[in-house]
Image (cartoon, rainbow, N blue to C red; front, side, top):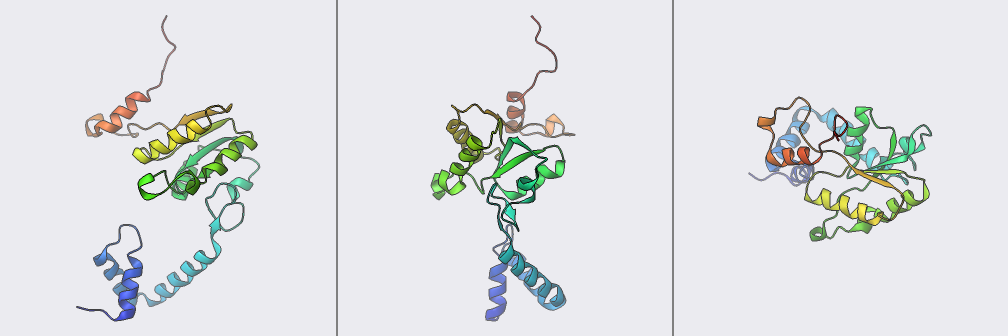
Length: 203
């Protein structure tokens, strides 16, 4: 079955969303047109306004409607502690915990020579400038625990090795409430490597 040009255009456009294949895009398009035309108009308007008005924070590079995002503009944040993340969604996840009061730097990705993504594409030069000029005492590398994320973290750590800055890596291990028998080997290995002492060393 062939769709009309406009319907096919809508289906193709919806496929840009993560996890949406041909069948899912088709169902979404038909649902919007058959039952949710008002919602479709609202979605179109909201998407257009967001694309036009949401940009990038000039300081940390997360998504922002203003040149400087609310977090970077907040004088109560601890500017001596900076957390480096791969994406704005990671920033949201950490903020929702309520346990971090430092500032951020969002790379918008990870190093990937195969895909042609290098340090300049991630703004690592700007990150190094902030570390040098803003009195950062600790840099928390919170890139994803995969090959690319680890490589990116090691690269950044190597770039500031000579600076008087503590570099730390977020712990990766067994989730709270998890049972060891259901945890994969890679996660267990990270948990063992990142173990911490609960009492003073016995002499």
